[in-house]
Amino acid sequence: MNKKEAYQEKFDAQLREWSAKIDELKAKADQAKAEAKIEYYEQIEALRTKQAAAQTKLQELSTSGEQAWEELKPGLEHAWNDLKTSVEERYVQI
Image 1 (tube, rainbow, N blue to C red):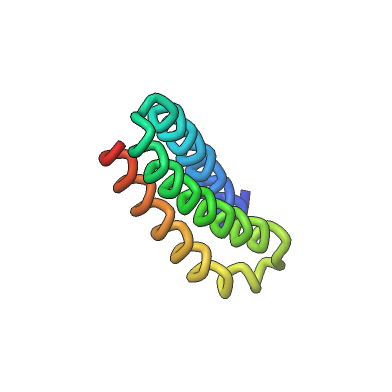
Image 2 (image 1 turned 90 degrees about the vertical axis):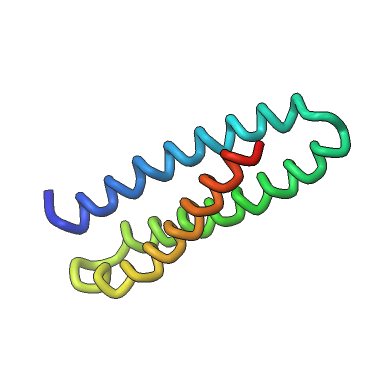
């Protein structure tokens, strides 16, 4: 396994973990009172948008050549950090 594949595998596994956490948040939001549900659903939608952005960056990485992936790495890491921070913040709130 080369460095690019290891990097991609690591982020793919993390994306699956965060997806599961977002699903847990949705389940908790489903049980919330009506006024809280709206806020929770908005937060979950924002997380899903960030998740999609990170997934797009990961797909770009997987289709890139060996040399091009180094150039894509900063964008992926930025999307990743944004999603990570958001998931962790929301997970504590709900």
